[in-house]
Image 1 (cartoon, rainbow, N blue to C red):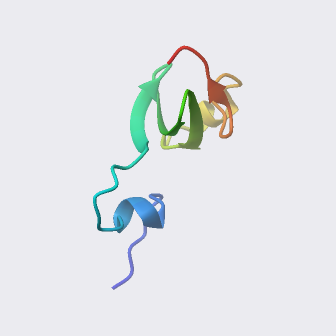
Image 2: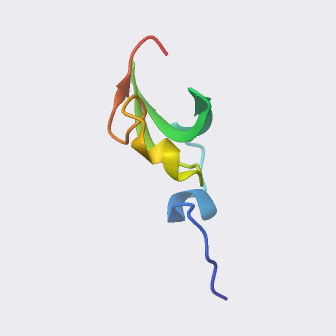
Length: 69
């Protein structure tokens, strides 16, 4: 079976275990993004939108650390 998806492999087939995922999909400035929480920091991992204009926004690029979130 072939799946054509923009979802990363880790979201499609999560590892089994007691670990709670540190990644979540949220809406940040009206753009769906995948974030990862690491201690006090929250970092954008991937833009989950299909709107091309969302990829041009400077305030929500992958690798950006979100403050006060």
